[in-house]
Amino acid sequence: MPWDQATRKRCETTINEKVRIIELRTTGMSFRQIGAETAISRTQVAEIYRRWTLAILLIRP
Image 1: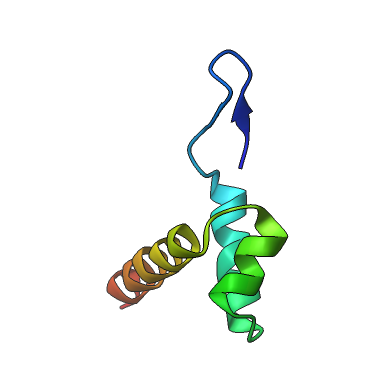
Image 2: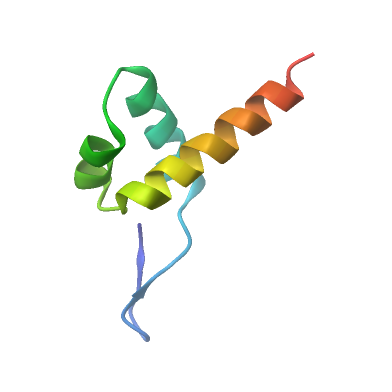
């Protein structure tokens, strides 16, 4: 997750990070392991995974 240099806070998660979370989860990694690897909190990882997989299911014909 990128950092805003002016405010020293994290910026919004990028598309690449979200795709990486989905990839890691499909390989069998836990949310905690993904969070440690990507420096994103476990709860945020779980929320991203839930929202993106739901969106993928809704898009498929």
